[in-house]
Amino acid sequence: MYAYYGSKESLFDAVLADQVEGILEAAPLTAEDLPGYAVRLYDAYLAHPQLVRLATWARLERTPAGHLFSEADESPKIQAIARAQDSGHIDPALPAADVHSMVISMAMTWSPGSLTYTATAADPSADHDRRRTSLAAAVRRAFRS
Image 1 (cartoon, helix red, strand yellow):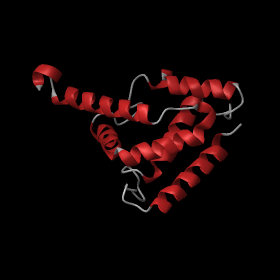
Image 2: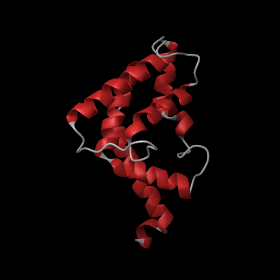
Image 3: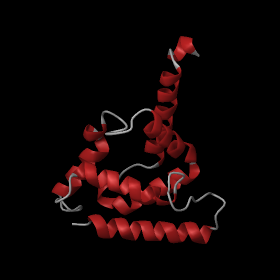
Image 4: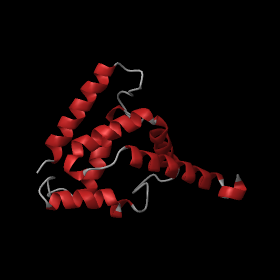
């Protein structure tokens, strides 16, 4: 392993990056549809709870403050949100990076990182449907222009 990664930290970084890439593919952002993005994130966290656990571990052990990933402010998703703000789809009074962070946090409400309740794939479909509907409504109300 050390021949490929050099250290346990590098291996952890590679695993976390791989998991984040999987979520990025599973939950593409359409800035004009933040509620849909939040629901796709909810579903991705439900299908891949290991990402939330890995990110939480990274926060606890390695990056206790600031961005978890150094390129966060320049990400294509934040740029897409800024463009949607310019076109009137998202409230322009909020910084695009803050909108992105809040949508992610809202989508994580029932994730393994939740302080109140962790959903699983085994929960009844009606519960997931209710959460998706609530999440989409909250995001729509919070960020529409």
